[in-house]
Image (cartoon, rainbow, N blue to C red; front, side):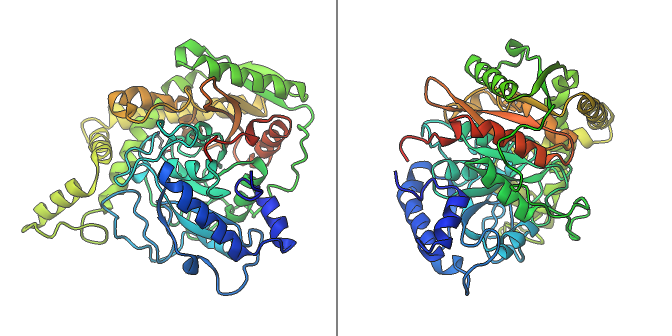
Length: 481
Ligand code: GLN
């Protein structure tokens, strides 16, 4: 295998520093790789031409010359940000998202727009109206979602890193299904300015990479307070990759869910890979404590209600008047609203808007929305209490490996319920990282999640790196790439 396709960011930085390759050649290299391999996986909605990617003068900063791709719900000035929807097919972002601005100021090079579920609603990337992304490990299977394009591109070695967004698991779940690392940081750590909203109180930009250290390098560039997002936390920018030494913090207590594995429908191969990961951490000196999180049983239902309610409010802005698609054939205003929203949104988005308006409606909000908020409160108390006794919590990221394309339509509810392990993290606002921890007999990747208290990203990276350091999973590649 060549030394560039799957190189880490640090390795690429060394090559650039030693002048073994220039940033222009690196861009050429990855654009060529995209030309060759992208048709097999359909991970990108657009690849930018080389001229428009290269900065006018040599890039400088902590990510100088390092190429990546961006989920199509994050705004890049002068580029389309379509959210994989007809509604925003021709919407050109007037400004950079704060995360993009920071990446550019650190010299990162942005090669394209990654495919996603429409408006980030889904777990398979099949609700994109443009194309269905395939899992590089088996192109008959889904890459996960909703950041499936970002995950597939990184997994196939088309770029070393990608940004995604995670409202209920959309970075961690595709990371797990594609065999890479994905972090959903603490709510408020990364500015949401320029991230097109799905459910604002749960949305966070996340990072997808093939290694823990790469992940920490990208997060370091984009995290930190932003005056343009009042929900961003007053946190200084940190260097998350600085203290990664492979050593587990002494005395660390690791909470492990007593998985009634059958109950959650966890695939036996996933359960055993996660149990093995726990043993690895125990051998490294971690103290394992079995814990119970009973409110988790209500999290998928609460997530279902809260996310739809917020989606209905957020997506009300797409009315054909201010921006996005407008049905020009309509002769009255009401007709224009109706037909624009009918034709502009796909089935999944329309159904979420309808459910969202229903759970917020005056006759039903007490029963649905307000109860879901109460569940959220209980979950927050439970997780805060749990972190008084343990430092991190370990659990599977997803209960099954990647499934076949086309399964979602047939078993929507079952697949929505599989947000079980990921959405509690969004509901409680804490950070979590998914790390590769195994391969199934069918050669499909498995990932596990490390969850920590608010703003524990440094600790999560330390634990994840200690695990990665002595296990082979992050070095495994999809065979056809
Ligand atoms: N699977 C979840 C959903 O469909 C996750 C979405 C997300 O995190 N953006 O809502």
